[in-house]
Length: 632
Image (cartoon, rainbow, N blue to C red; front, top):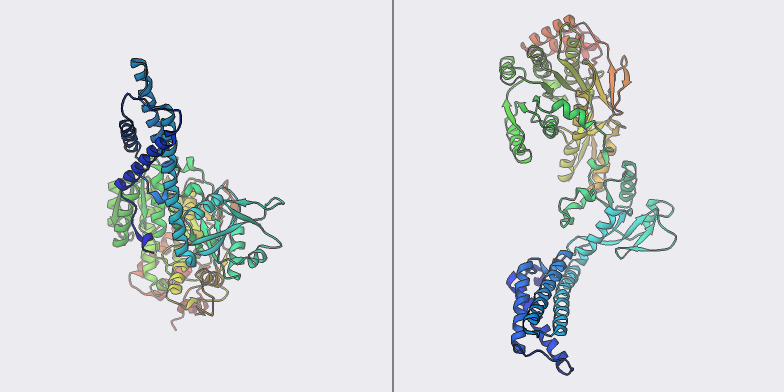
């Protein structure tokens, strides 16, 4: 309909319409009083009285900007403006009457005519706005009726009731609310926002199957177990699932369309909000000069964003990825204008370059997140893992001691436990180095290692990869039907890193509660269903086989480790045996020296000597586990 495509009425037209309605109200009052005993005062003529009243009303329109709202989207605020305009008109006119009567002994305006005029003019202007709004919603509803999805809202609380009311009012939303679904419901039927509350009978899936709906909307504040139940039931019935944040998180309550979003796999893999000791973390970072290596990466950049809340003196963001570093710089300028930060383009394996930075900035805290982490690529280029993951860590650790850094936090990985690939083994070597270094004499720097699994949305994460494959129509590729992984969100992982950095005396390896591992095949199937497709029918899933160095499951502790709890329920200490620093230093020097010769086979052999639990899987280096001296 072309009528619906029109822009809102210009303000001068709104003023003119209100003026005409006020004029008609004056005429109606005149005719109502014409055959009654009441008579207008003759101080000024009746037309003049009408002109004065109309003039005062128009001035009130401008004073309270009754024309400023969009008529078809009138709100309670617009009604208040009309009330104030009418009230001020009445105050001025009645006030004029009282003052004139005190001076001259008579009145200018008939009080009855003033009251009737105010009542009629306010009512007519209010009805005009209601009529326009209702007519617009009716026409919009008719034009979009075929495009709307029939939906139910799960649960009854302030959040869902506000959403139900918004859906009823916003005709442009692509939803038609059928009702609210709830287990907690009184015995008799009742309605909320004009829609019925539907009791959950027998089970959720049976209740949903009886409803002729296309979607369900749930709050993302529901428990993760309940969210999974709702999604599983809806997906079985081929019903789309949407989620909304809590009301407090609605940045713009009028923009409901963008607040309601289809459920993503990340929403289901997330865990309940964690509790942090904010005061301790703030005290640890406020006023400090902090270095974050790998600062443009997914983990490093999130650490920077979280640190920014604690008012550090200065943050140095180091990375060798120029484009990513530039993008982060622009984002931080926009999001954290008060943060004093500097981006530095550098390679952690370049000792000379890194030492210049330590001399220049006098760091208090170092977060070492720089690392090569893509397993198949590192398996083909072991020497590169030695340069960055091991030599880079050695350089930073030595400089941290030399320049009296207070805290050094190494970001490690679950792949360092019983490693089956070069990447994991190189990270385990880095762990061993900083852990053994801690127990050398006269070491004032506190070295902490944090170890966790896959983070959602990080570079190389399987989730974005699956999304891309689904968007392209498939197939989705999974390396093994039984492969499982732990998942954690980037913010949660970084929050726990910051918390762990405040704990212990140094030398600890902290492992995080990663929850229950997820079967990657199940994740792929659910992602396809959430996208509105049927696995193996609309989009196929292909098993490609394990990649070089990949194993079916990751571990957070090895067999010789013991775990002990900390005061934080999601952080534990892995009691890993610490080796002699001199021995580790000697072996690492040999590995680094061999890496410069790019003799990958010898590099891996030496790495296996340093990390005896390192057993290659699905890799050309498996032969070294059978006979380390073999050249065949």
